[in-house]
Image (cartoon, helix red, strand yellow):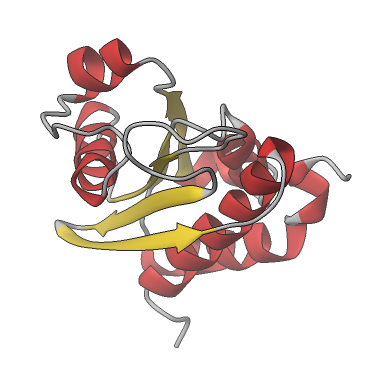
Length: 160
């Protein structure tokens, strides 16, 4: 399977174009993707102009202590929303994409394997989505990265 930066280059370029056209800075907060989402975003053209960075909050303590997550379950829409808002605040960004959930192969936190929650925040407006992906943990990660990039792209203002 391709490296996420290669596999998702086209959509990362679309994110880059929209972020730059709108003058927005972007961050990522990721759990189950362990940096794959940030890797894909960082490959977008002129990333140093719009991509402020990413926070890999894999451990529950990092989610809570660094990003301020208060959600009872770290595999939930509320957690994804709090990851996005926490990362945007911490890294002083206009937009944030966040993903959390259960990569598998086993269920966790009351959710089946492949259950992924994503949230995107753009200038204070936040939207979350729940996905149910199939496959082994690596396939779930790659599906999550693609879905998160599309969610972020679609939340950014279209180019006029």
